[in-house]
Amino acid sequence: MTQVTRFAPSPTGPLHLGHAYSALIAFQRAGAGQFLLRIEDIDRARCRPEWEAQIFDDLHWLGLRWPTPVMRQSDRMAAYRAALARLASQGLIYPCRCTRADIRAVLSAPQEGATHGPDGPIYPGTCRARPMAEARPEDALRLNLRAALRRTGALNFTENGPLHQGAHRIDSDRMIAQVGDVVLARRDMGTSYHLAVVVDDAGQGVTEVTRGVDLFEATQIHVLLQALLELPRLSYWHHDLIRDDQGKRLAKRDDARAIARYRAEGASPEDIRAMVGL
Ligand code: GLU
Image (cartoon, rainbow, N blue to C red; front, side):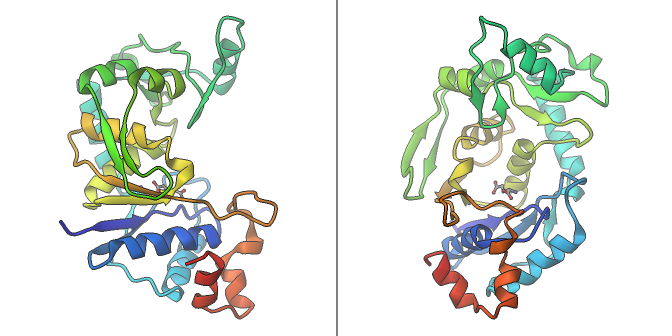
């Protein structure tokens, strides 16, 4: 099978060394196959066209090439709606009206163990019995995780990257305790990162997902959604994160390590590769 990889940045700030590393690994992993780009711009309030233009420019400068037109998540709302309709027809999603403060209040009650999952506090299930017929446009939509896992049965995925290499079995009890009912459509957004990434990886024919190890824990959510939506299963390559001199991972606001800044200072693409250890 031809390998298809992708780099999926959000245009919410300048690309920094960590993004360059991620994009270069995806390009390398594609080998003789195909490297794709996807613009993850569902968060309209934070995305800017000028950041998107800078992404294309920086990646070109680094020597990466990809087919056009590039997939843009803001064009994909119909696909996300169809996936949500399918999950709704299986009785697996429900409308949630809880605010962050509501969730915090329930979790701070003495009998609740307030643990955090990949998306923050584990949802205590307040709205779980609410039927979709009562959904209002301003509600978030959550996955009933226990019901979803019961439907799919045992799940696993293959990690090819060096950090967690091997076959991983998804442990339902652990997932229920440590992930909880994830949001699949956020208020005013029509989707969430998890749903969009799964629908779009399938839509682009991706075969291996390369991304930072900070998203390793989210992978079980994606594998579960692929099974529920009967989408092709993917393999994964989670890479280590590029850190600053204090050992902190780079953030979008970390302009000091923006590719554009190094370019302006006269760095070459080879210098960037060397800086990230490639
Ligand atoms: N858009 C995400 C980010 O910029 C990447 C998501 C992914 O690769 O699955 O962090």
